[in-house]
Image (cartoon, rainbow over all chains, first blue to last red; front, side, top):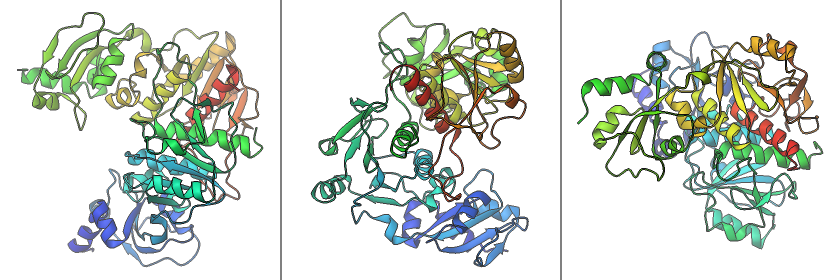
Length: 258
Length: 258
């Protein structure tokens, strides 16, 4: 049986404040926990599992605390808790923008608030081999349980950095000079524009588009064209959908897939 | 002041059973309600609004019931109710698969359960000029408040039909013979395959892929390639993301955008 104190500590990890204090976050469900256990560079501090959970084959696991369904419900943030819950250490190196890369393709996310959107974007990045994400400090925390969940485990493979985006872009302009692409602007049709296999791709906040502070750094503005004639169609795309289309286009044209 | 009976009737519309009984559904917030009011073929039965809501210019509105913030909270399904809520009549013609089209590009959705995914797919369809959606009977109801919300008003422009997908595909094979595309299968790389400006595009259920009953009807299987080598990346994409990428590719290649 697990104590009330443990339940309280685990549940506190649903809040960013306590994740930052403890340096821990939650990963839930067999799919996500299996992805965690097969990924490098992550340290599992605790595992809570129903007797029916089968650990994947592989390296030795940390101690497994066997819990009842009722106890798992008390620990979980999910509506339907699913067999296993892991407490994971947040790697400190992931959390700050330090070195500016000199190659690779990166997403730059400005004020993405919705955890489902961020998690889905991490999953897209993993699918198309994006090298990493740079997020503004006010983007939702990537260790928020809903982000981890929506990433379907891709959070354990894609580096996510937080910090000042203007600083990042200044450093890039002084140093590696990766090309900077902006989207959600009046730009060139992305399906016809020249794209490259390295660069920083700025995805704007859904409501407000790209932050004016970032615009001066953009070398090439890209637009996803729509069928809309005279404003009779949708006037925007969800930011995760736009990211999916942009990443697919960069991927297909820079890897010989088109 | 609005009566308890009215509050009860409105709140009941959050449930499919009562939407079907009454033939009514809810649309909430200024953005969605403005899209409703400028769309043809929709009859607004009632409007509830805060005194601060400004109706858009245009045709005369039905009676507006001015309500307090507290009353709007009681009516609304949203966490943060937003100024206005409309009760809308469900057009009967939209709800069943009847005629099979002989041209146009349609999405065929099999057992999409998540309302956010369906709403987002409707918004994508609107952006790229998709002619309409055919959904299996067990796909989430398109008049579910969360679907309406996630569609950002595109629900008022994109026809959504429900019914037996095998029946639809049998009728198509006997009649108009639109080409049938399937996704989420071991298919041809979508970025290299021949695509057409008319057809039925089957998007599989996220968990289970395309229903085996539908597979025999597929003329061309399409695959969204990934960077993953030896299974070390994401093993799937969210169904709305996959739909966005597929629609973008059909759109860009069949409208001279590429």
